Length: 199
Length: 47
Image 1 (cartoon, each protein chain N blue to C red):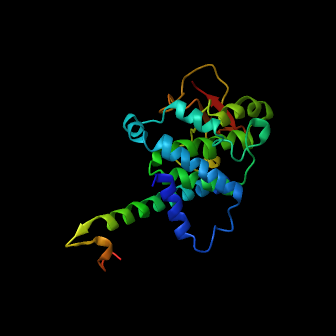
Image 2: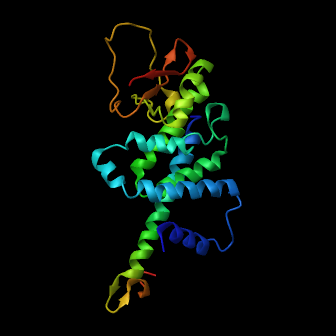
Image 3: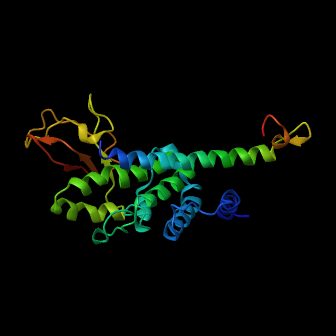
């Protein structure tokens, strides 16, 4: 029995009461697609990616072309406008690969970093960045660590100052892996998001 | 705190997938591994 059929027969045995009422046919189609991707394109190669310390860009672009990064974003940017449970399906199946580094790379980009551009970016910023974010051309990261704010990006106190000087500037660790780092500084008393870019 | 709703749901769901994979791997092992003439699965301490 191949791997996917094996997982499916297990699922069937487990769900004596039928599929969870929270998931629809559309969710299950997405689940089957992610599962196929995990079995054929992640599991056979991910040990090597862990060794080298990052997931190759072409794999991320492939995930983008399959629509994994645009699950909840509007169709006008190339997204598929599904609901939060579709994100749950994506995360569950990526987690199931047992390669949490791959899962985290994809999920931080699609659900944790790019969402700030989407929620707080200006129309121009969204038009510029969202299509690439969804296709996987642009990979986002979060630049958030501060003494009083870690993963809660909105609690950050850093402020943005327009300047041509690099004095006081900080390099972004591992920035070679991501295309864009999302940084949410305060500008004056108004909270605004800015996408600072590095390539 | 607003984005926690999104982040934590995603992290929780990924952890669920990982936990399920761990259970599947464990089940495979206890069914396949034989000790003292029977699979581990047949021993009451494992069941």
